[in-house]
Length: 245
Length: 203
Image 1 (cartoon, rainbow over the protein chains, first blue to last red):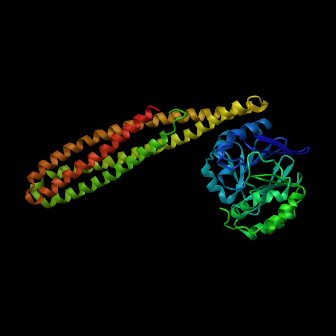
Image 2 (image 1 turned 30 degrees about the horizontal axis):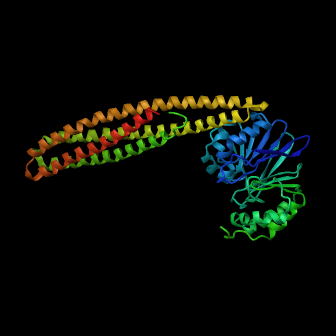
Image 3 (image 1 turned 180 degrees about the horizontal axis):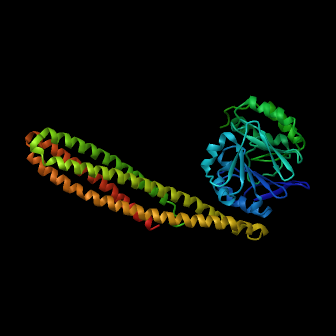
C-alpha cells in the first residue's frame, strides 16, 4: 500500500495509507490515516476485512504493534471498521473511539478485547502524549452518528466521507485541479449525505477551524486553497438528492 | 477441523436445527400421552392394561424432550465454538500473510506476542470443539437407545388396544400409531445428525 507522511513536527507525524494494489476491484478504495506520537498512535478508519493484512503490514512498517494504542472509527460502515474482529486479536489492549450511538452495532464485528470509548454527540478530545486531537461532530455526513478528527497543531482535518471522491486505484493522493475534481465528488455527496441543514452547520463550524489539509476517507486530500474551495462548493451543493444512481 | 474448510459451523448449526425439530415432535408425543391417558380412563376396565403404558409414553416423551433440548444446546455451542475458531483461524491466516509481507521491517517481531496469543486461543478452541463433538456424539447415541423402547411401546399399545373394546380400539390404535411415527421422525433426525457429526469428525 502507498504510505505518505503528510505532516511532521517534533511531537508527532501524520501518515496517509491507501491505494492498495491488491484490493479486489469490486470494493471501494479507502484512505487510512495514522497519527504517531512518542509512545502512542491513533489509526483512523482502519478499513474492512479485505484490507486488514495489508494495513497491519503497513502499520508494522511504521511502528511496533504495541505502539498502536488507539483506533478511531468515524462511523459504523463496513469499509470503516469491519476489520475490527481481526484488530481485536492483534491489539487486545487498544481503545476504539467511535460514536456512542454505534457501540451496540459495531460490536457485531467482533470485539472481546479492545475497549470501546463512546464519543458523545458534542465530540471530545484525545490526548496522545503531547498532542491534542479533537473528535469533531459531523453527524448525518453521512452517518447519523459521525465524527471527524481535527489536529490544531498540524492543521489537519480527517474529514471521513466529507470530500470523498470515487475514482481509480491509481489516482494521485492530492487534489490538483479542484474544478476537474468536482464530477468525482458530486454524486457521492448528493446521494450519501442526507441533510442540507447538517451539511451547512458542519460547513460553518469547519470554517472556524484553521485547516491546511482536509483528508477524506476516499479519494484525494485537499490542501491550502482547495480546502476553502471545497467548503464553498459543499455549502452551495444541495444534498439528499437521488440522482445518477 | 482444518483451517481452510469452514463448513463445520454451518453443519453444527444444521444439527442444532434438526434437534429443535426433534424437540417439537417430542412435545407432540407428550400430548399423545395425555390423550392416551384420558381415553384409557374413559375406556374403564377394558383398557386397564393400557394405563401403565401411558406412563411409559409420557416418560419417553419427557426424556426425548429434555435430551433433544440438551443436544440442541450442545450443537448450538459447538457451532459457536466453530465460528470463534473460524475468526481465530482468520486472524492467524492474516498474521502469516503479514509475516510474509513485512518480513524485512524491523518492527515485525512486535507481532509475535499477538500471534502467540491468538495461536493459544486457536488451540484452546480446537480442544473445546473436540470435547463438545464427543459429548454430542454420546448424547445422540443415548437418545437413540431411548427411542428403541418406542417400538416396544407401540406394539404393546396395539395389543392392549385390541382388549379395550370396539368403541376405544381405534382411538388407542391411533395413540400407538402416533408413538411409532413420532419416534420414527425423531430417529430420522438423529440419524441425519449422526451423519453430520461424523462429517464434522472427518474435518
